Image (cartoon, rainbow, N blue to C red; front, side, top):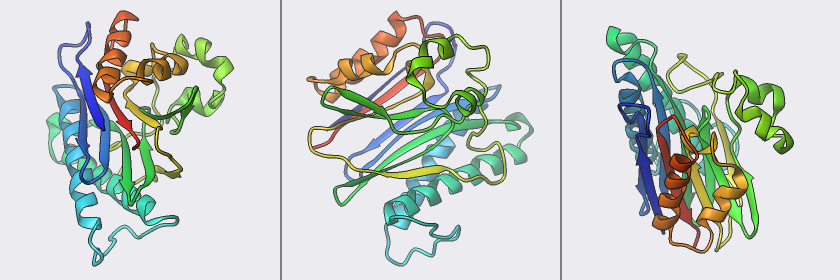
Length: 246
């Protein structure tokens, strides 16, 4: 069971976020594009399309692994490869078109394969695991602030107001190459996974995210998160995907 929702928000004139759900293939994606003249929207859609195409290709036993398999599980290898392919596609598209120069996108992808879960991420869109009364941030923000403060929850309130909180240290398409964060995530029936752009987590804290998705259908939880971000004054596009582990 999974659902997604997105809103342009009260300030932006266009929505440069993009999300995708493919329950049959176990693929769930959130991207937050950036760049002028709608380049952010182009970057987000291109990155998601490349991820989907590469994950479909790497499902085959005969897949050749042009970027190498790396280390870890096959799930992590597939995610890593898909993120690297997405990065190359966005970087090359930006280099080839003057109107797209400098475009990029965050990208967070969840892959469920044979009942096991892995998550890969570049940028500051996040993945959360909601289990029982707890909420765990699974991904690491590729931001200057996170590199200094880490994930210290005690500093979360101060971090929200920090002038450097939006400065990204890594995004899809910014450089010709770069290594994404990819990890296996042990999950169990009853767990809820949430993918979100920073339009949500900049204004809604982790505990509240968990509270809004517990005990309700995925679609209801996704919309409640969007509504909460808007009520809390988000100034960005806001996008969420909610997955119930069955």
